[in-house]
Length: 253
Image (cartoon, rainbow, N blue to C red; front, side, top):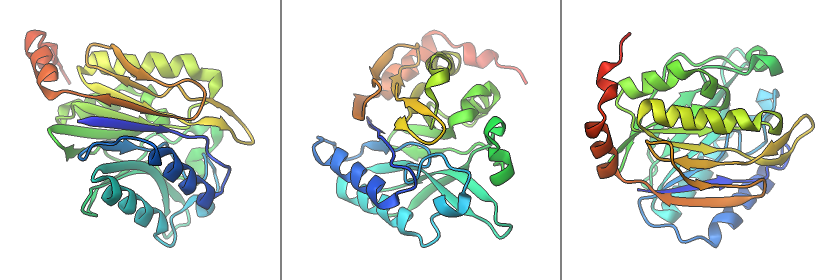
C-alpha cells in the first residue's frame, strides 16, 4: 500500500485556505489508486480550543474528504472536529473510502490537558481500527502518542499500521521522533506520523512527519517545510518479521 502524508502549513482558522492548500499540494503528485492519503490533526483550522469554530457544522469538510478520496481513488484519513449537544467538541480522525463510505470516526482519547483541551473537548473511550488494502489501521491523535497503552490496544485489535495525526509543537520535537520510533518497534507495526508545519498564535510546528517500518527504520521523513511524503509499505515483510521474531505472542495484560 502506498502512503501519502500531507505535511501542511495550516492557516489559522481559515478553512477555505487550508482546503485549497491540500488541493494544490496533491495536484502535482503521482498518487497510485488504492493509496492512503493522510492529513494532520484539525487540518482545516489548526489546533484551536474553539470547537464551534473548528467543527464541521455543515458537513462540508466530510464532503471535501470524500471528493479527495474519489479523485485519487484512495482512502483519505484526516483530522476534523464535531460538536455534540452539550456544546463540547470531539477531536476526531475520520477515514473515508474512494466510494464515499465513512470507514471510521475515532475520537482522541487523551485531550491535551496542559493546553486546556479537556475543558473544550470530550475524551474518546475506545481505540478503533479499519481495513485498507491488506492492512488493519488504527488512527490515533497527537497526545495519544505519549500513552503506549493505546498503541498496545491497537495491536491487540489486530492493527499492523498505526497512524498518528498531530499538531505537535517544535519545543517537544525530539519526543515526537523518539516516541514514533518506539511505537513502531514495540508493536512490530508500521507507524505513520503526520504533523503540521508553520505557526499559530501559541506554537511553532516542526513538521518531521515520518513513515517508519516495524523494525524502527525511517522510510521517509519531512523537514520543517510543507511537503508530501511518499512510501510503500509491504504486508509480506511485516508478516515475515513478526514470524521471525514473535515477541508479540508474549504480551501480558
